[in-house]
Length: 190
View 1 (cartoon, helix red, strand yellow):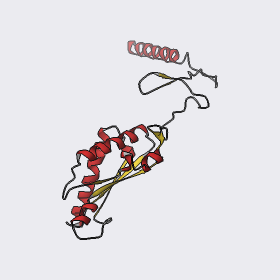
View 2 (cartoon, rainbow, N blue to C red):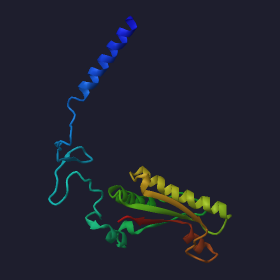
View 3 (cartoon, rainbow, N blue to C red):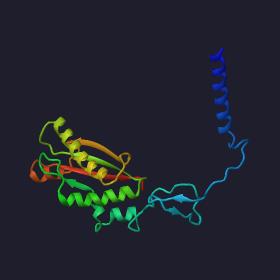
């Protein structure tokens, strides 16, 4: 009998707690007040701008350093115009100069998360097909790691290896092989 009374007491207490939890709930489609402020990445309040709907996140600006992205990417004076990175024979190591250029690409991508990039890895004709596919992938992944470490989201990057299948130079000499050992960055989403 005591067990029954104790069980009923526990159930009654649980029902009172549940009833208290619903006491302040909005019912029947009543309006809910909404604060019209956003918070930036630094935690500071961001005031709404005229003509921009509040409560909707704006992703990316379509510009980089105050210029349209398409203009910056096509400007031969911009470090971002370098989108092909070359490698030594049987290597996936990036030069210091390439790392600096890739830092600019990382900054562009991290400031514009709606953009994405495909990293196409390539190799010269020497070596087996399987080996060259793996080498092209290692080269593209080396660039992917560098971009990730500098704040580019993983969802923005796709790695593809073509190995020796898509040469840009058709010769069978060192000059042709040098041009075929590369990773190409192909942008989309801007």
